[in-house]
Length: 149
Ligand code: HEM
Image (cartoon, rainbow, N blue to C red; front, side, top):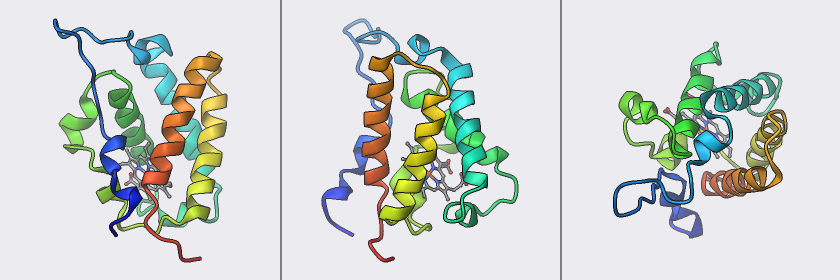
């Protein structure tokens, strides 16, 4: 599909560094509480997915634990934490990895609804929450690959 959603590069890891390699603008990962915050987000998100009649059947594995761990590691890396995701899974290529699943606007809405609960559950500052939310909203749009019911 070649359309505006093809700017999928935006959901990949981007790091902006100063001349000496330092993170520019502070490290979001540390500021929001590091690994523990992302562990809580991924765990809460997958608790909601487990009870979702649209999303649950999409997950190939019976145990959602490994999927929660992949999401956690990806988010840690994306927000400036350890790069364990990349070491274990390679380049994220998220849009490509989501191709096997039918992601229509309804699936996107369900995904975002659960991610909203997950983000709310960790009590971020309003600014950090807004930044994280803007990312999830954009990334979930980039993942759309179907407009069929
Ligand atoms: C828009 C609706 C979305 C749906 C329905 C969806 C569904 C799925 C499914 C079914 C999987 C496979 C389970 C697994 O083996 O891990 C998956 C994997 C994954 N998803 Fe999503 N996803 C959505 C959006 C997103 C977004 C917005 C992100 C990131 C911000 C994301 C991050 C991931 C990651 C990191 C993986 C694991 C990739 C891997 O290493 O294999 N997903 N998703």
